[in-house]
Length: 241
Ligand SMILES: [Zn+2]
Image (cartoon, rainbow, N blue to C red; front, side):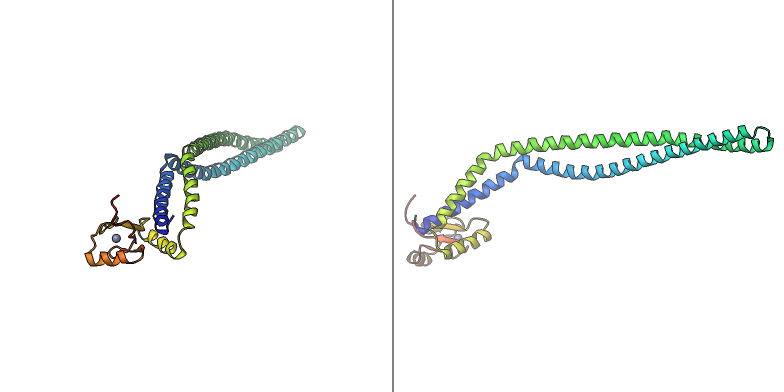
């Protein structure tokens, strides 16, 4: 392969690689996978909050039950004391007042207990829902990933073939030309090299004046377009293809 042929082939390879990469990026699975990832991140934040609230709710419930036990113990103590002091009328009356207060306290604790239980139940349900959703997202991600890999297999195979050919083609191109190509490819979005067809470059399509054309044809085969400054292959300009 001559250097100019290799250069033109290199551009074809790179343009095809760009198209294939664009195809991979545009595959619907990629969008879905991105959406799933965002949803998973969002869900993980919510789940963390719910688990924190659920743990707090469990502690509140434990505290409430401990307070109830303590109150009930106190009631038993006072009842025992009241029996012992059965003859001491005033003392018993004080103890009964105390018992009444304790009973009210206990009632409040029991009421609060129901509220706390309801709260905990709600949080546990929310936690379960979040975990179910996480499992669903996980399944969906696996499905999309598998589908992406299956559908992109042909493209990836082609990418590997092109990458190998690119390496081979580069071996036929001098470092200087390869560097110029790399710069021009960046500047012109991949369309780095054009050819001459008659006196017209194939990409910018600005007709060359006769004098300039003659000069280019006498110069090196790989040169620069005087108009758009892409690399220009003059070889074959006068051959009808
Ligand atoms: Zn040009």
